[in-house]
Image 1 (cartoon, rainbow, N blue to C red):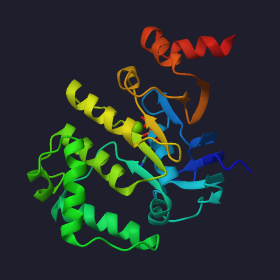
Image 2: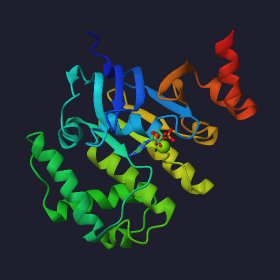
Image 3: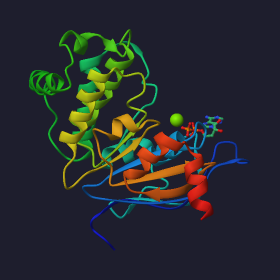
Image 4: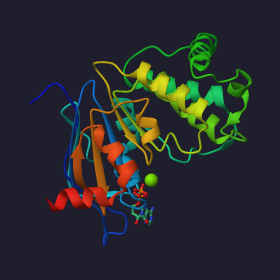
Length: 256
Ligand code: ADP
Ligand code: MG
């Protein structure tokens, strides 16, 4: 056993209707301190992989295993996985009418603390914590008292996801298209925050379509998905090649 290992996925096969396999045998190993990126055409299975790791109930694992810190998570509920340190930032963050953002964040934060036998923070102490953290993602303070994601711009929703990632201090942060719909300033702010979040005991899995995010967060590995499989793994150079030649580049390399 390698204690540097945060995530180990072995032969992961996933379906949603017991018929079609959306993931067809994914193998992936992520060590502490590493940043991995997943790229691939629309519909190649990137979000399915993210949701299967996070434990989305709709995605049934029919074969294989998911280990977090050497613990088998394959059949754990999403909430348990989250408490154990898996964080998924959604591609499309949901609006929650009637629930204000700071209450929502405190609930998530305290439920995590409680599950890990830590003391919960009272509203005032939490407010202090979240105020400091929200400044670093360049979030206005009124944004904390508004309803979760309601009327937030695309960029604000993404920043809110990054704020949650930071608060929950997750071991493995999975960021699904965190860069989509962001202007260049918001992209840089988010990239800076992700780089600051990164340390020697956590890991980050970034799903993206574009090299531009990877100019700011340089991944150790880039994996390319196609039709439910990882078809290529390389270093950060591959992102530039894809930008230049498109996904046919991978096809050509795999033919060699
Ligand atoms: P990506 O994130 O790479 O664009 P997805 O993982 O979202 O791709 O989708 C992979 C494939 O699985 C697609 O063909 C998609 O239509 C299908 N799929 C994913 N989720 C569902 C779902 N909830 N219901 C039906 N099909 C789904
Ligand atoms: Mg997707």
